Image (tube, rainbow, N blue to C red; front, side, top):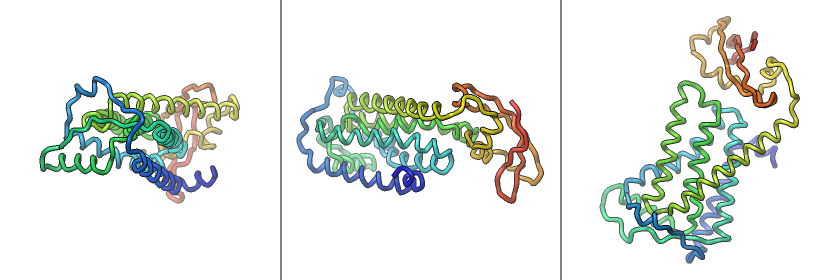
Length: 288
């Protein structure tokens, strides 16, 4: 099963999406009266804002965009590093909804207005019941995605660095929108945040325990480059297009994390040559 998932990541995401949507739809139909009403005094002080539907709606395309972006632009381990805590947390949340049915009664009785914002809010209210709210999946997913942007080295490239603060702004906006639309209580947001941080930490510990024991203590940098440990080909693709000429050599300095050497950073000066026959860069020399 693990080998099949690694070979077919798109099918894996599609099957999980089918499982999640089916499970959530079943909970929406079966849970009509919650056993736990979620509410705190701070909820009563936060006003309703229909314009918050804009960041709230961006949550839906942001998830597949990030997953497919990491799948095709980043090293494959970055993609699975996001999938593991993301899908684990979503499954745990569904199970918690089934074991402890919860809901809230914060929505306004009527959303006035004929503008697009009011219509979208009314559409969300009709399709999404005020049940199964704690912890907030919107908040959990947003925080987990934001952490992936700051963790993956693919966003170290100058033309992609803007995506990290953009992810931070989007994460905060989506989290606030769940409260402003009265879709969630402040309690839901807090537990969604804590769940995301907890599972991300657990995934980090699991990743380190798998890498360190099986790796030799010292390996030459050249051998590590040839083994693809740093996925440098992803970085080369961001190089200046002027270097893509046969026989043109150029030097780059890379600061990479060598987890096999007690998490020490290694500053490597590498010399590469672009080979049009295989459409990739070849390492022709390196030194620390």
